[in-house]
Image (tube, rainbow, N blue to C red; front, top):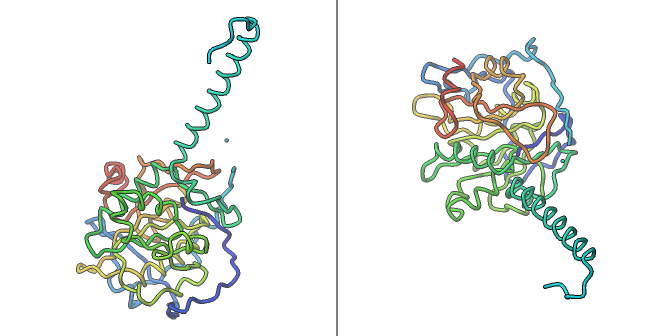
Length: 297
């Protein structure tokens, strides 16, 4: 899944490979043009209009997590009945357990969710759908930056024998994944949004972003990072972005970032969450249902 974690975060040591980039005094905004892409005409140079830090749009919306042989001929009939009943009960429990594991998919390979970091893994179906959508925009040599959504890494390892796994780079605060995916991991803290690995600046061709806090201010920090990591497109737009955040933030997400919701795609987690989440994109989806995206013009 993605994950949700508190806005406040203790400072993390800066990675040795990171480059400290001065934060623009006013982060540039993103807007959607008629072709469905987000104009970022030189947002990396900080020339776009500033975001309204005092926006009256929905403020902090806290995520409420609600973490569901044959029997001997002399055996009495009553004993046979009891044994049969117990066997059926055990079999039913086993089937239920297997069904739960099937629903979880590969999420258990990520380890336990850290609720202190507001981690909630995507279901297998959701993770695969988001992964396929992101990969649909990446050719050979392309890079998908996965910001705070480690659930995508497991299906990426399994898809076509891991053929596309090297295309994904995970930016994540939880150091466990640095051990699990050592070649695809960069420590990332959105509270230090400009502390990024130098080698990744202006290299990313698609993004999947799942902020831990469901509010616009947190999302702004992620887009500061996104603009620094994004490989500029020839038409001046930023690469495709898939963002998962609260459904109730739709109006603010549209206004601040030019993203539209993919209404017919349901975000499902292996644990129940109190706030419904929604996928948003800055382009007409290729794998997810594009009809609902077009309807939200």
